[in-house]
Amino acid sequence: MASANDTRQMPKDAADQNFDYMFKLLIIGNSSVGKTSFLFRYADDSFTSDFVSTVGIDFKVKTVYRNEKRVKLQIWDTAGQERYRTITTAYYRGAMGFLLMYDISNQESFNAVQDWATQIKTYSWDNAQVILVGNKCDLEDDRVIPTEDGKRLADELGLEFFEASAKDNINVKQVFERLVDIICEKMNESLDASSGMNSTNHKNTALNETPASQSSSCSC
Ligand code: GTP
Ligand code: MG
Image: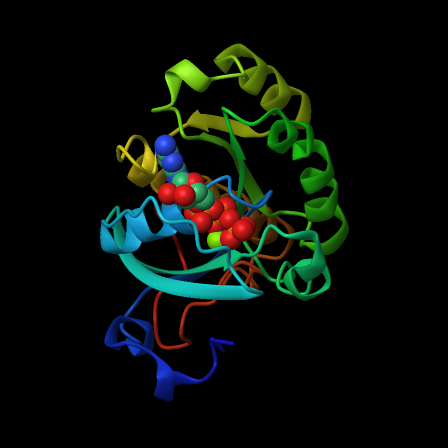
């Protein structure tokens, strides 16, 4: 299993220390909703229709630029199968953002969203940002979850919402960019709040994983 701390095994991008922020993100949801496909589309711009169910957990690293900041994303792809739940929930801690995914052509995956949201509440940091993603929107003929139902559930759970397709590359980049932006917004709010409370202690928040030598204010 990959370890994010073991730089010897990492590709060049993963070991690159030249960044302003590092955000740990997790992709969760039922098996076969397309979590691995979504990550491969985003990180490698590739897609395969073969289904190789993820064993445990894996991650990829991608660096993005948002408002002149280099943001290194460590994106963890979790196994949806129930039997890996103990392993995968152990990775929720410290995650700043989640993509909670269902498949618009699979009722069961949509029914499970509430449970996944509860898992996030139980195991993750309170301020973690979450986007609900209805994947496989290319499968319009097989759709069983209307877009409105996805939106409504997202509203009820207080989450942002996108429909997307890893296969046709619809909204993949947009979902990650939005997640980065809402994490940055939250970070700025925390910085504002902490500088209001204590003007001498505005350099650190729980969200800030910037190397000590670099700026800690995010203008995303
Ligand atoms: P686990 O690892 O078991 O949790 O599953 P997963 O959520 O990672 O699913 P995975 O990405 O392996 O995809 C499951 C199947 O759905 C594969 O056959 C993919 O090719 C297919 N798939 C993934 N995304 C899409 C999509 O956007 N559209 C279509 N039509 N198929 C997709
Ligand atoms: Mg997978």
